[in-house]
Amino acid sequence: MTILARWFGSRFAPDSIPARLRHDPLAIFSFLVVLTLILAAAFAPLLTSRAAEGLGEPNPVEKFAPPSAEHIFGADHLGRDLYARVLFGGRTSLAMGFLVVFVAVLIGTPLGAVAGYAGGWVDEIIMRVTDIALAFPPLLLAITIAAALGPSFTNAAIAIALTWWPWYTRIVRAQVVTLRERPFVESARIMGVNGFTIIVRHLLPNALSPVIVQATLDLGSAILTGAALSFLGLGVQPPTPDWGQLVSTGRVYFPDRWWYVTFPGLAIFAATLAFNLLGDSVQDANT
Amino acid sequence: MPLLEVRSLVKQFPVSTGLFSRRWAQAVDHVDLTVNAGETIGVVGESGCGKTTLVRCLLRIIEPTSGQVIFEGDDLLGLDQPSLRAKRRDMAIVYQNPYLSLSPRLAVRDLIGEPLLTHTSLRGRALIDRVVENLEAVGLSADHLNKRARELSGGQAQRVAIARALALRPKLIVLDEPTSALDVSVQAQVLNLLVKLRAEFGLTYLFISHNLDVVQHLADRIAVMYLGRIVEFGEAEKLFRRAHHPYTMALLASTPEPDPDIKESSVALEGSVPSLLAPPSGCHFHPRCPWAQDRCRAESPALRVEEGRLARCHFLVERLPALKN
Image 1 (cartoon, rainbow over the protein chains, first blue to last red):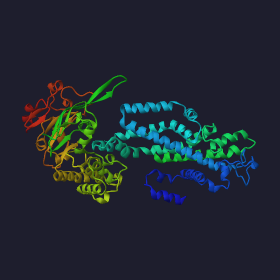
Image 2 (cartoon, chains in turn green, purple):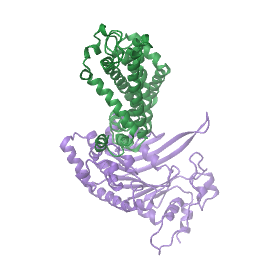
Image 3 (cartoon, rainbow over the protein chains, first blue to last red):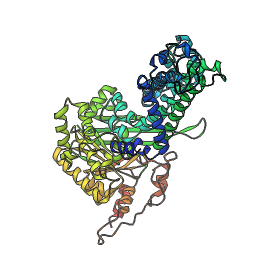
Image 4 (cartoon, helix red, strand yellow):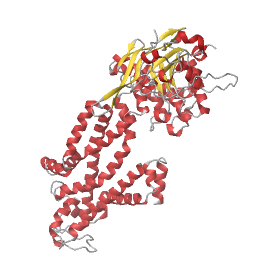
């Protein structure tokens, strides 16, 4: 913990968000949980001797083996080790979360910056489109888009991102609108700096902290939504594992084979909670 | 040809007074102003008199309602965006508070480098050399290149803002209360720096301030503004020796006189600045003017030339002899 704190402390300005977070035990705890989940997913093949089962190869002899020293999370209906399945499922679920947030930020931020800086009819058009996108219930819209595009990892990520970007547009626009009137922006305009450079050099760097807060908070929900789409069969297709899809398949065997839904469910729970706690802390540190 | 000529500039702001009703606040009311190359013009007035709005209009940060701003022979208000951007190479502004006017996340090298990057082809080593040259011109050094504004003292940060404004050797530098946010001890240093730079580079300043003492230190000619109008405009020295407009007199009287042997004038300002939404009838200054007559309440005076100076008062000739004693 102290090593971590020192590493943080030496690398960031005294009043920056990371520097403040190191005084927050909950932030450090949730950061460590997140880090553990990411590392476990990244190094999944090294953490289990049953990597092939994790990726989907059946092992019928051990069908529904309960949790034991051999299978700490038990085995599923095809005899695959659930610990390996959850490890490899983490790759899909976490990647889904990051991809969704990344794409949403990528779409939402420039739109919000342009709307806020340009104002007038440009602002009007962008924000009305944003309002329309926000008018749909997000999960329903994501389901519709995913169903239209066909079930796959990428399509599910696109579907969720398409329902999420408006939040980033709103956040960034609100920031840019207040920053636009600041003397340092005016001073750049008087010097003849063009609009694009003003947005990139003067506005975005000062508008990003609430985006980072929102993105951290959203990572948890993105994983959850990704799991929901997989649960409905609109995400990753078997045999590739995904936490949502594991829960979906396993729920049929509950409560007799309780371990099948419990461990992937716990993974979703841990990831969502840790990202949300981290997001809350980042938000507190930002104010 | 003057460097800058402002003709009949008007800026009105809409102010909503109810759900469907709005009124217009005339922040700048038919202002005429000329600035010759190499000259320093001071614009003084209480806060809310429209001096900052005037500057924002003539730099075209906000669009004026009507009028002309002729800069080097071109009407800025008629230029399209690309030509305006090119024209902006020749103008710069220094704001009151350097911590607000310098981009918080940029280092000094980028702050001063920005105008050079925008308007010249200097890059890399040559760019940094030019940045350092400008830093040295304002009394800082290459040691400050990687600092951000918040790591500098107020005086240092304002010097960086001046170096940034100076980088392209613009023809016109607008100084919007450049010393008001600084410590008193630093104010004089910054003023002296401005005087030094003016001599060194032949700069033209448009100096906005509410502080007559500061303006006296720099200005060749002074424009006094009241409620969006210029009420007196003339040579600084003469204006300080004897004001023509009662408002100028009151401003001069409100400045503390350090020499106890000089008897302070007894003209004092009473009341406060009226609302721009409901300016007084006739002469805007009449509710606070000790000489106000019925005519002042009814009729708005025009700017008249008197002893080589412009003043907006009905009673110049009649009143002047009486005030000599």
